[in-house]
Amino acid sequence: MCDFCIQHGDGRKWYLQARNYSEDLLSDVRRRRLIADFFSPGKRPARRRWPRGTGLLKRLPPFIRRALKARASRRMRKSHFGQVLPFEDVERIFGFVNSIVRVPCACRYTTLGREEGYCYGVSVGPGGGALGDLLQGLDESFLHGPDGSGFDTLPVEEALLAFAEHEKEGLCHTVWTFLTPFIGGICNCDRSDCLAMKATVTHDVKAMFRAEYVAAIDPDSCVGCRSCMRVCQFGALGYSAASRRAVVDQTACYGCGICRAACTSQAVSLLPRAAVPGVAGVW
Ligand code: SF4
Ligand code: SF4
Image (cartoon, rainbow, N blue to C red; front, side, top):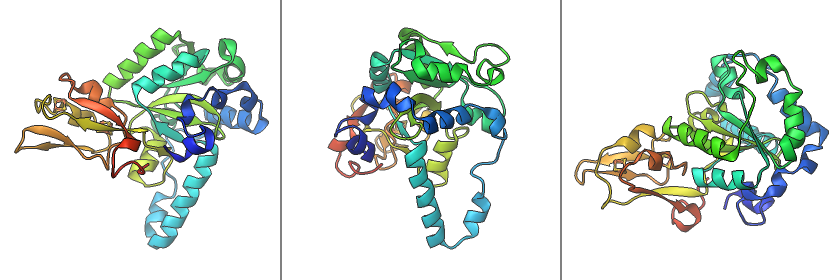
């Protein structure tokens, strides 16, 4: 279990607890302001280089660098922090929320300068509840986009189909807090365009936990086609020429399950991280 499961989930998966999506939490004015700022692109310069100060950081002594990164991560844990989760847990979340709305991804807007509908606001309030009201009240030019498709309310079946498509694109599902522990959305990320994933994996500034799972490959089912290797964003898959099979480095695996979706031989499964010695405490 990650720290958030202990602190915000009573020892169960914190992102499966409906109270972490509650309207009560959303009534906090600071939280509402954070969400409004997050989805108001006018307040953030598009195409901003990320993370700012990376060049400067590299020139600092290692112990200062480590301290600054740890401080940045601690701040993110309190405000906007994520966790990787596989498709089945997205399905579980969609089973108890009352509203799913697709909105343009704030990261892509920042890194690419355009709207891409990869983020999904989720709410337990009927008809979108307070989150829906908040999003609807924001800058329409961003949330509706030039093609008018930026802010869609989706039925569960349609949202799941969209997530299955995102898996085919090789995108990794991640759940996000807005002033922890309130969860306001699920995004679909890659290392190229997701600022938090880039910060975590490339720059070692932790902005998200790994999933509560880790991948395993059944050597009897694997045919060595390497399709899984092409989609893993974390460099966790390799190929054994001797056995002509894919192999997973579980210490590098984030447990996203995207390799499983790419494997037509059903050779990949996700194991509970807690049950795998050596990586049970690796987040
Ligand atoms: S995609 Fe499946 S069958 Fe192909 S190498 Fe990976 S695990 Fe093996
Ligand atoms: S090995 Fe599979 S589950 Fe693990 S990080 Fe790579 S794609 Fe995700």
